[in-house]
Length: 94
Image (cartoon, rainbow, N blue to C red; front, top):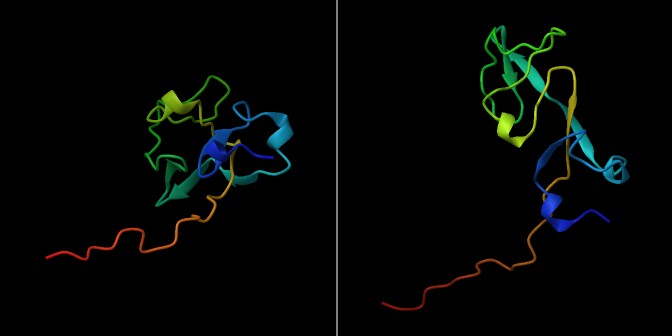
């Protein structure tokens, strides 16, 4: 069973325990938009000098969340629906 704090988050393969890989959805880590490479996690434009020695690009803008690298996938668990019935707050005053 996936921990509830994992829902709605994006993980690199290294950040996610292999036990959860079969249950996780995946998406490509980067996309081309108008001939520019963009990070799928933070949508930053990838600069030419953001390149590893092996030739793959990575995102420096969201490196604090773990290295998001070109050619690798991001893993995620879609958010669950809320158990709160809406409207949760209803103003009845003046």
